[in-house]
Image (cartoon, rainbow, N blue to C red; front, side):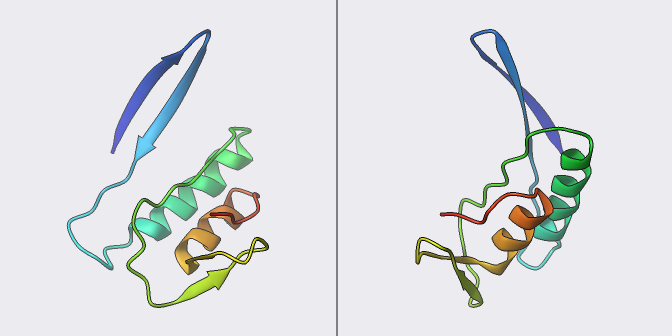
Length: 83
């Protein structure tokens, strides 16, 4: 895991990237856990999944399709799943 700091004017944003060596390695589960932990600590969390290789999907309120793992991560962060 690597923390990256970006200077956005006067605000420092902390970014965390989770990477794995293969599919089904547990990355999405780790991200969901981290979303819950940091949300409970008062951080504003925004999970992002750049590529969806899932066969299982969820339809958002906007009638868009996302992976079930993305829904789990959004719910762990107490935010609405969106595309």
